[in-house]
Amino acid sequence: MQINHPKLLKQRLFAIHSNVGIFLSLLFYISLFFGILGIFLPYIQVWEKPSRHFENIQSQQIYYDSILNSMISNPDYPKNNIYIEIPGFKNEPALKVSHIFVKPTYFNPNTQETINDENKQSHLASFLNEMHFGKPLLLIGKLIFGFMAIGVMFLIIGGLLLVFYLKFKNNGHTQQGTFSKWHRKILIFSSFPLLLITLAGSVMNIGYKGASQMTYITTKGQETNIFKVTNSVLFSKEKIIKPLNIPTKMLKINTLLKKAKNINPQIKFQKIQFINWNDKNAQIEFSGFNPYRPFLNGIYNKPKIILNAIDGAVIKDVRVEDRRWGVLLSDALYFLHLLYDVDIITRFFVAFLMFLACCAIGFGVMLWLEKKAKIFNEKATFYHGIGKFFLAAMIGVIPATATLFIFQWLLPFDLEHRVLIQQIIFYNSWLATLVWSFYRINSYTAAKEFLCLGGFLFIFSSIVHFIVAGFTPLELYEKNMLSILSVDISLILSGSLFILVSKILPKNRTEAKIFWNKI
Image (cartoon, rainbow, N blue to C red; front, side):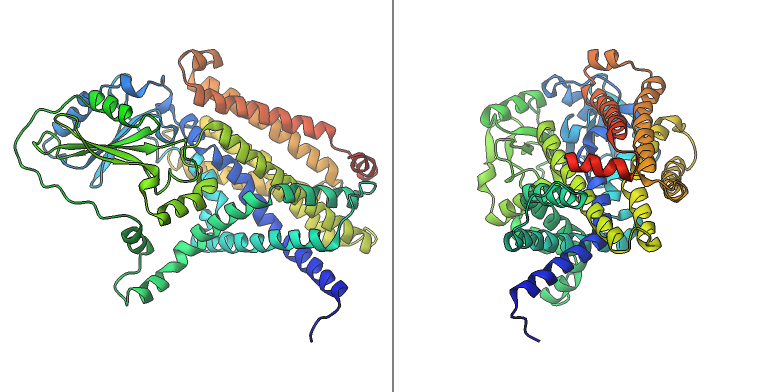
């Protein structure tokens, strides 16, 4: 049946937006919540490891030659295509020496001693990031979150159409009016970056996983890995340089690094590749990120400078704009989602946008629940249960996540199955909030309790870190461990904010009507 009545079309569009929105809101909120924490992953992954608690050092003060020589002096270690990741890359304070066929080795750049990497004992930052895109549920989780991202894109577009066609009034004299007003205003303000972020998320969760069949058909059965096909198109194949096996003295790595910085001072160098080191045709490649060209580099596009390792002559100088348009387009698509190499100000800005989006989802959920409660005269057991479930999932996740930070330092690092135990505590804490939500008849009281408890737990996690790690805030500042100190400060400020909000929020439905009518 053809729809000719504009009013009926608007009603159906509104109904679709409302019903699909409530269905996807929970997953989207969880993705955004853990995505905010994932934005600060480079800082959390330093905070969580005792081996990274040492003073930061400038890249030009590091004795690269002695570290590299200590590695290649081992007759079993490969002599070609060795990589060094400069401290500061992805906020990593350690110097990393790696090869495609060898397990990476980490050094304290201050003492040049090898350090332990607690990857098996510590998984906090990675777990928070994995929760963002559903990895704990393996492939099915990634697909669910990927399809959710596609659904959210349609919700954003549909919501903008609704605002355009229905001409909503900013009526703040009722709870429904307040919830509707702030749900619209916040999402209109953040709609464009949200579209880019969800588009990139859907491509990474579904596009990569679902591209194998298309790749198989396109290559006539020769290949199933999409990256092997796309990389051959996006990147020109590097010419293999065979060693001459003529031992030759190299320039100091610091000298070559200084030359590279003079050639292109805009590049923030992150990685060094050694090609045929100590041979007559040796080369050294410095690659990194140009912060003056955001959205165009940092992911696939890495500006680089290749020098002759013997005399420092320039062999190749690859700028950001020298790449193919496909590489620039790929970086532009993923930049806001992955935020590789960006500064802390940009991270806070994107995190603030995501926080506002979380608030907008909360207003949308409360609007839906308020409407259903009025329709069923506030006695609908089914919608009451949904409200409790959303309460535990959206607010209860705060104290549950705080337990991850606390037990990161309470659990001994030599404890067997340490990561598993930490995650079990998290899941059980989150489940406990659901039980408490149903136990507490008054949902307003439960929400205030979750926020207050989460606030105290986040503050306590910072205190536990100071005690167990053996550093005071002043010592962290004096020893230039600012990234670690910044996490502790953020935990304390976030906890204080949650406690403050818990004090401001209304205690019951009567106070809630007055509270929301004022906003």
